Length: 214
Ligand SMILES: *Cc1c(COP(=O)(O)O)cnc(C)c1O
Image (cartoon, rainbow, N blue to C red; front, side):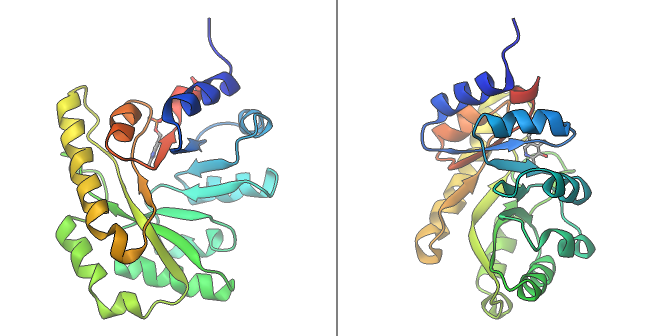
């Protein structure tokens, strides 16, 4: 028998303890998102800016909206007024645009650097060397209206659990390396197929879609 959206959320929250659950609501209808809201959940994640903005306009204002997908510079202005966390910063150029738009909105926008940890070529993100360069750059220090909270990464889409584990360990190591000196508190890793491995390796935030809605 299929479980309800609410039962799925409660089950996952039981499993993950203190880890923050972001319900990934991409492609899901307003009615489905309302069920998530009625269940008491307030952290939603979307990939596409247009969908994020449309849904934010319709649903209650106390939802925390996470931008989790690849972000184009020219779209930042649409989410800058309300986004609670951008998970997908993969260049200083993009971050400068976020800083500029945050200023216009008189806000400080929290963000994560997205790391490329998967074997697939198609996934976006920085290498650990590129991250090190950005973190030590004077350009970063000049930005006043953005605040880095940590890193995000997506593992290879594979049934090989050992490989996923290796990739998550790698990301966790990068997170821990910079956490103290930068006052980070967010390691965003884990999706429907691999969140148990992710939480076993120190994830503080998981992004789950299909396991909740299917
Ligand atoms: C779609 C998506 C998720 C959720 O994936 P599921 O496998 O449906 O849980 C998480 N993170 C990102 C960046 C996504 O695009």
